[in-house]
Amino acid sequence: MIYIQLFLTYLKIGFFGFGGGYTMLSLIQHEVVESREWISNSEFTDIIAISQMTPGPIAINSATYIGYTVTGDIWGSIIATIAVCLPALTIMLLITKFYLKLQNNRYVTGVLNGMKPMMIGMILAAGVLLLTPNTFIDYKSWIILAGAFILSLLKLNPIILIVIAGVVGILIY
Image 1 (tube, one colour):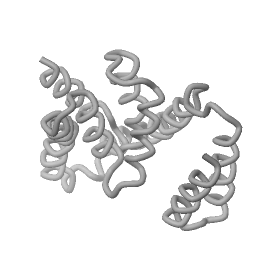
Image 2 (cartoon, one colour):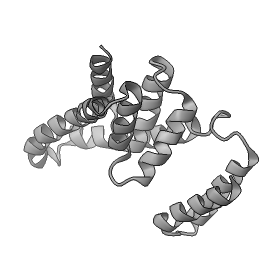
Image 3 (cartoon, one colour):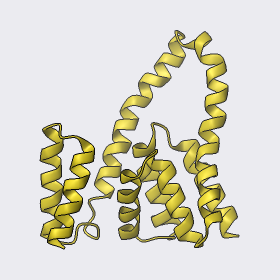
Image 4 (cartoon, helix red, strand yellow):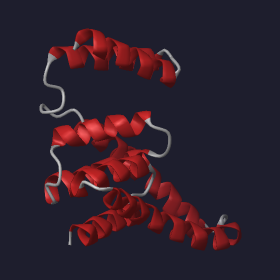
């Protein structure tokens, strides 16, 4: 039964997660932490951190990790990953067929322009959700967050930033 619930949950996330992985984070968090209570908010934050560091889209990586965490086996990973990818694949195949004909259509342009602010809002919501009191429990984490933010504003290479944060985490903790 858990496999069907996992498939339907990630199929829903795949269908309604417009804008890419970061915009999907608040939807994923709502579904797997709040609604289903499959994992805690702290576990969710850890999974997102791992998903960001591993190659590939964050939504797919997090689906793989959460699927495994929920079921305890590889089948949960496979089911969640396929379910989150299936809607995008299906929609993209259909859209690609018609997009070249409709790209200058004012309704299509209007829909796409209307979705941009919503995507920015979803990304901001995901950031706020990751800043809950249960996530950053001590001042050391806030220092790492502030340092990473400042270094990212200075356009430091993200790979170097990840390595620095990992080293600082090892030294502090």
